[in-house]
Length: 179
Image (cartoon, rainbow, N blue to C red; front, side, top):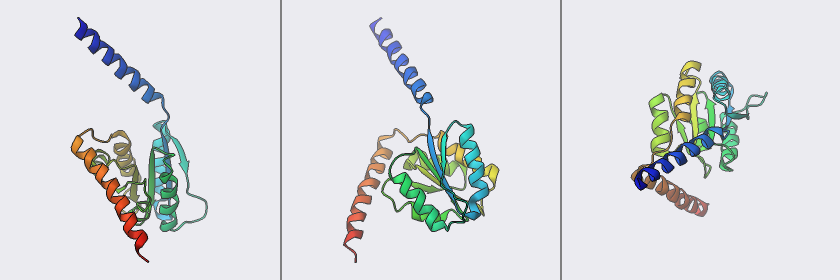
C-alpha cells in the first residue's frame, strides 16, 4: 500500500510539473538576412501558432549575414530566450558567427532528423537554416522538430555537453592570449 501511495504521489508530481511546463510561455528570437526572409517568416508563423513569445531582430534594412549572426548571438548569450532561429543564404555564415558567443549552441540543420539530433545530443539552443536550400514548408518541419525535442537525459551525452562547455572556456583562454 505504501508503495502504491508513493507511485501515485510521484505520478501526481509529474503531472503537476508537466502542467506548469505547459503553462510557461516559451520564448524565441529570430533574425535573417535578405536571402533567408521567406523561411524566417514561415518559422515565425509556426512559433506564434505553437504559443511562443517571439522577438524578431530582422529590421527593415537589409543586414549582412555577419551582423545577423552577431545580433542574434549577442541576444542569446544573455540567456533571455529559450530558442533562437537564424537565417541566411546557406545558414553557414550566421551559424559561424552566432557560435562565437559563450551561451550559444547553434546547429545548422537541413533535415528534421538533424534538428532532433542537435537537441538530443548537443542541447543546441539556436537553429540555423539557409534560404537557398530550404523552402518554407521544410523550414517549418525542421523548426517544429527542433522545438519539440528535448536534450537527452543520458549521462554520457550530458557529460559530453559539460565537456564542450569546459573546452569552450579553455579555447577562450587560449584565444585571449593570441595577439
